[in-house]
Image 1: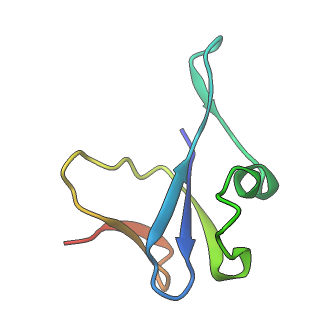
Image 2 (image 1 turned 45 degrees about the vertical axis):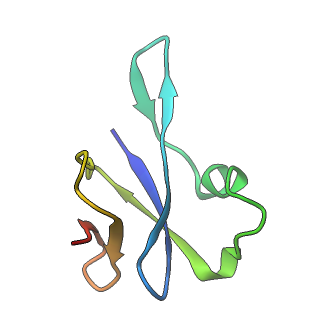
Length: 78
C-alpha cells in the first residue's frame, strides 16, 4: 500500500501525504512523481520539495511527521 510523503528537502517536514485508492479493487495504486506533484498547492515551491514512497502508516496522535533525509524514512515528530 504505497503512500507518497511530500516533504521539504531542508527541514524534512511532511507537507502532504498522497495515496491513490481504487474503490473497485479496494487497493492502493502506485503513482508517478508527476501525478503526486500535480495535486499539490500551487503556492508550494516544487524545487524545495521531494517525495518519499513509503509503507509507513501514521497513527492518530503520533504528532507531526517528518522525513529523516539521511535515512530516507518517515518518522513521527515528538
